[in-house]
Image 1: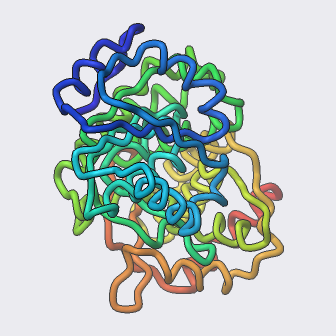
Image 2: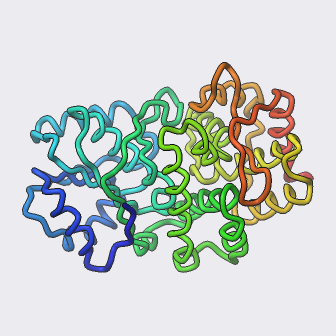
Image 3: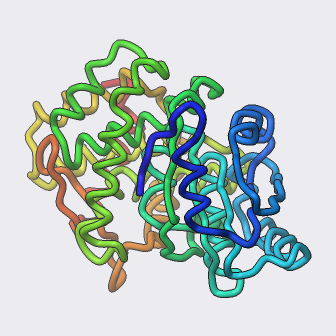
Length: 348
């Protein structure tokens, strides 16, 4: 269930009462503790005992060490299978929180209350939980659906612009793979602000949810949600490895540019469509200098993508605005051409 929260959080309180949890844990990071918890707590009405658990903010903390600390806290506080975890945060909190809840005592219930645009439109939906390991994104995780997803657009007003833009990349992706009107609406925006984006959040969430409903375990059509991510995740991992984090959405934007060019090379779209899409993505997102990374190093990391099979790199590539194909296999030469295209894009 996905629901927009009213100002007094009535729907959330009613839902929690219906679950009748034995105890409630609220997972936050430093940012949501300061900016979002003060909005949630005064509106939370429950007779169940609750505890707030705070973790350090940042993708670098979405790891097995943090997961272990949370399992230990659950144990110390005697969490049982009737407990409820409320993940109040962005993608790190919802990914990590869902993972620890779905594995502790073989799983207890959790709710996502996403506070960033990225988590509203992407991370909180679909039941993918996970942590990073050895610089590989989300390489350890589970498929586990939250009991509910409650979003509150006013939380977006607490975000820095870079975080807002990061989530916007996933919204653009939803339009490119599934809804040409959504793409046209978003790519026509003059600027990225909470007010400008708010009318389109629900449609992005619907697209993600509709795709997931068709293929929960990512055996076929759900793979289209990874457009831009095969190359984007590899680049993100390389920056992570050298101790420099880049916003997820900026990596996805880079990946969408490269993979749009791959779609051109594969004959799925023509030059006009490719050029128009790439120009619109460039209008919103900065160029990321990846010249220091050898193409071979990027490709090596792409082989670790979870959607690969039989030693092949599988891409999800658009075959038009609003349409996407999965399990597309391309040659190493084509991938190198795509990476070189991006590296030289500013001189084109």
